[in-house]
Each structure stands twice: as structure tokens, then as C-alpha cells.
Length: 352
Image 1 (tube, rainbow, N blue to C red):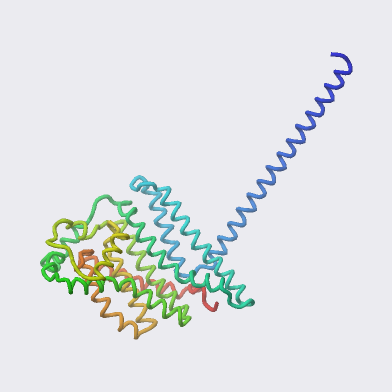
Image 2 (cartoon, rainbow, N blue to C red):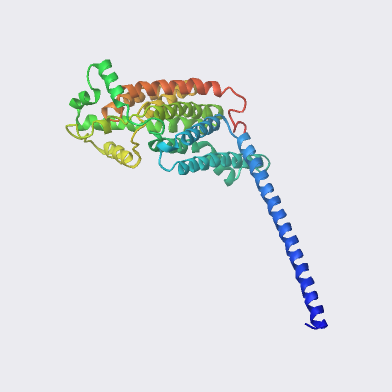
């Protein structure tokens, strides 16, 4: 290698070293920028989560507490459930959606104070108030996967023995002697009324902008349901529909309400979670809510709720013990929910 080549080589070597240093510096800069961006994203996520929590009310406190507790149970008893990580991820998504919805609605409501109501503010206001019904549906359907989370096997024998001790007969089979298409149809109608109690009461309170009453009845229902969900996880019962399958003399034939209930049960029937009856718990919580906030509606609901309680046994979905359990959890939902509603900030949308 001559002197000229050596000089060129050294020059190239210097250039390569300079480029390497430049690339390294640039890489360090990118890494530092990436870290800063990550820290910024994490900080913003924390701020938005805190803002979402600040926008929550009593209903969300109960809902998020249940998701946290059931998530902890999934983690503790992961070996007893299929795909625990999927369930945990789904619950995390639901909790994040609740926080995001509360945060967005609160922000839009603040803007509406000086801009006036817009289509967007009405949209978010509506969903902020009516999403609890979807939350209840999600939790109930999820119970089919959680019903053996803590305890394997069914506990129906204990409830069958209780019914026998209380009534002297097996109520499901004893009521079968009265089966007639007209009575079947009436009982299926009575069973269907469960879906209307909270909707009707909520719609009246929402229409009249009684936010304290509205969130009160939602919180009573949430507490009653959550108590039932937790009991169902620790005390799995599958209901007479499954326990006595194939033992009935005939199917319950009827008209349009019978067909409607059969369709609903076909699409959403849960194998398990029969004790306590969530139907009864939800109806009783709504009934107490009507007593407190719209007394005239209580007297309108009362005969339908009584018929609905009887229908749960007649249509073979519950034991008598389930009905009593639902009455207790629904009443506790009202009592505990009333206490929670006295907490400051319980009515998150008050005055908006």
C-alpha cells in the first residue's frame, strides 16, 4: 500500500468512525425521544384515568369494584377457568370503557355549559345514563364462565331439599299439574315483565331529569346484582331447567310471549347462576326504587312483581329458594345502595 492509499484509507476510516459516532448519537437521541414519548403517553394515560375516575358516580364505584373483585378471583383461581387471561383482558376492557365513557361525557358536558347542548352532548349524555343495562347483561352472561371458578360441582341438591322441607313437595313438578296453554302464556308474560321494571322507572326519572333518583335506582340494582353475582360464583346452582331436564311430562306450550321467552332463553340462557334469582333481585330493587322515588309506580309494579316471582318457578327456571334469595339481595341492594348514594359525588351528572 503506497502513501496515497494509506492516506485515503485513514481518511475513510475516520469517516467511518465519524459516521458510526453520528449513528450512535442519533440512535441515542431516538432512544431518548422514544423514552420521553413513552413517559408522556404513560403520564397522559394516568391523567385521563384519574379524570375518568373523578367523573364516576356511585354506580361506577359499585361496577368497578365488582370487576376488580372478580378479576382478583380469576387470578387466584385461574386453574379452574378456561382462558383466564382472555376473561381478565375482557374485564379490563370493560372497566376502561366505563372510565372513558364517564371522562368523555364529563368533558362534553363542560363544553355544553358555554356552547349549549349539541347532538354530541346529547349522544354522550344518553349513553352515560343508559349503559348500566348493558353492563348488567355483560356480567350475567359472563357468570357462565365463572360459575365454577371457586367451587366445582352443583349445589342444587341443597336447594331441592330446602324446597321440599318448606313446601312438602317439589314445586316445579307440583306446578306442572296446572299447565295449560293460557296459564303458560300468562306466566311467560309475567316472567317477561322483569325486563321492563328498571327500563320504565329509569325512563320516567330520566325524562323528568331527576338525576338523583335515576342514579339511585341504578345503584340499588347494581348492588343487588353484584351481591347475586358473587354468591353465584361461590355457590353454583344450575336451576331446575337443567337439573330435571328430560323429567317433565311435556313442554310449556303457549302463544307469542312463550315464543318470545323461548327465543330469549335460547340466545342468552346461562347454565348456572340460578341462586339467587337475578330476575327477582332486579325486580325487587326496582320495586324499592319506585317506592322511594315514584310511589305511584310502586303500586303499579307490585302485582306484576308478585306474579313474576311465581312465574320463575312455574316456567322451571328457579327453585323457591332462588326467589327468596333474590328478594333478600334485591332488598339489600336498596338498603346498601341508599347508603352509598349519601356519599358526596354519588350523583356524578347532577346539575349538568
